[in-house]
Image (cartoon, rainbow, N blue to C red; front, side, top):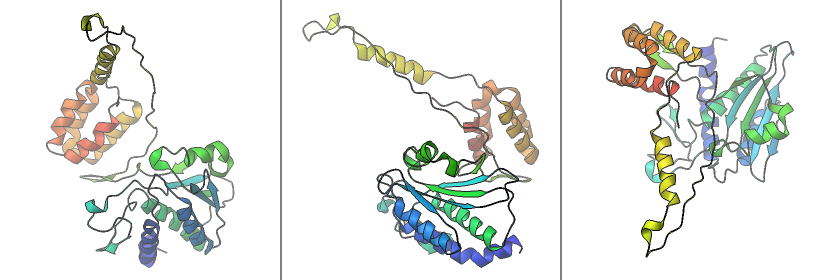
Amino acid sequence: MPPIKMFNEIEHEIAEFLSQLIRIDTTNPPGEETKAAHFLADFLAKDGFESEIIESAPGRGSVITRLKGTGEKPNLLLLSHLDVVAANPAEWSVPPFAGTIKDGYVYGRGAYDMKGMTAVEVFALKLLKKHNIPLKGDLVLTATADEEKGGEEGAEYLLRNHKEKVWCPYVLNEGGGLAVPQKLGNVYPVQTGEKGILWFKIKAKGTPGHGSMPNAADNAIVRMNKVLTKIGNYQPETLYIPTIKKYLSEISKMNPDAQEILARLLSTPQQSDQILDELAKTDKPLAEEIRPRTKTTI
């Protein structure tokens, strides 16, 4: 069946599924994702899927189900999360947890981040099974708790305690595949790495003073502030790894109008901020897309 026809047939069903999922308030904290996990498990059970719900703590549930392949190729994980960030109803034109469907859109907290992708992955699983599409590797669907607060009670818990049930060498998840429109078509980024976090402690020592002898003090807080200011003002050298060079080169091919300025960006990374400021005057979305990929954040 052609993909467009297939989508038209399920358009109403997937919109209604997402609407119902949004109505399950999984604001984190506290999360309470188990109720959403049961909703997914019950929905998939109608098509013969057997799901497992694993709780890291009462109410903090993640759901896992699997569509078996032949084992000839590696498995693929369809990953999403069930929790959402808080929503202030006063800031919304519709109730954030009503799952309102109007004007061809589904509105609500989580529609974009990321119950919408949960819906897409659930229906991908259903359609593959319904149409008997042969798979050479297993397709594992996992919708987790606690992504918005660091993942400790969700993905991290599963990997630490049930790795054999979820680990796959390939993963489809949020954030890596948004279309970047260019003159000759769309560019779809593919994530090849993740920025890391380095935690460290700073200790400052000083000599205590007294209100009657303020000049005798060697204030540790003031000394600490000097260190923090130095860190905050630090500007690391801009270095392009091969992935970034390839990324900029491919965008240049898809956008002749930006070829000259992107060539300068590639050849003079130390001037990246100035060049991207220049690009933003004519193509702000493209400049905003490139800038975080070329910078290190402190």
